[in-house]
Amino acid sequence: MSMTSPRTTAPRRLAVAAACLAIALTGCVQSGRTSHPDNFSGAVACPVEPDPSITTSARIAWQAIPNGDLVVKDLQLLEACMPNADISWVKMNSGGDVIQAFGSNSLDIAQVGSSPAVKAASPPLDKDIRVLWISDVIGQAESLVVKDPAIEDLQGLRGKTIAVPFGSTAHYSLLTLLEQEGLVSDVRVINLAPDAILAAWQRDEIDAAWIWEPTLTQLLEGGHVITSSEESATAGAPTFDLVAGTDDFIGANPEFVRMWTAAQAEGSRLLTEEPDRAAASIAVQLGITPEEAGGLLDGYLYPSAAEQAGPDYFGTADAPGALGGALIGTAEFLEAQGEIDAQAEPAVYQQMPYPDAIEEVSR
Image (cartoon, rainbow, N blue to C red):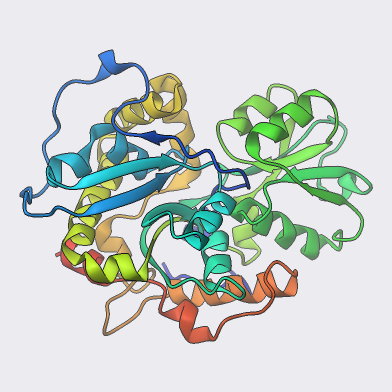
């Protein structure tokens, strides 16, 4: 498998890609399970030797995306691995929210899509952030849902209104295919957060929406999918759910980041090797049944720590992988679409992936 930038043809493995984000901050701090506490089987062991010497205070943003980050949160792996750390979990609705929070220096680590991460690192924000982990590469988990049953493809949306959270990977995927189909000026694209998309759909104010779970399933009760982020990846625009952190936080807390990475690796392992157990955690965090949660996992690819340490993703400090190049390609696209004022120097995006902790944990 090899990773390509959004201006090249993505390989089949990367024909599963994309993620989540919007524009309204819902900053409720949470820790532990948010619902169904009776499902909890008790304390979960840290996958590595716990380190009580770590006393870092960390503000970590999570999103309602069915990946290993939710498993880590639900099983309280960070708390088990670093019992004396002060960890605050902050819920975000979207990557747009994360960009704002990074801009106000109110987060240390955050789940964020590849497009918002690139926007945060680009002018005028120019935030010094590093990518710590790929939570998932997304395909059909993020899709374009249309209400009119007679519309079977993008061309059928001429003159229609499409909702999407601006600044998200969904927005990036949508613009990629609209440009490819020559439809950029022939449709109306509006910016709505996921909950606002559902409300607008129910009021018949929009004709289509490119969105992720759980809103995706809700829209499918009265609509159908005509394309997805799997197709936009094939068109050369792979997208990812990433976890990013500020350069200052990472530099000051390498042991915390190493332990955090070990916990994320365990979350991804559970998703691929023990999917029923992982689905139980995701179900709790999303407020759905384990069966529903298990069905969400099919639209994603969850790379292991060993895979992420390889040349297709992070690589190593001495031999960087392809992820930096994909972020450069994302910046090129976002500038062409007017989503960023200008690109940073290519070295900024090339250096965003932080391979050190992944390299150590994957050994």
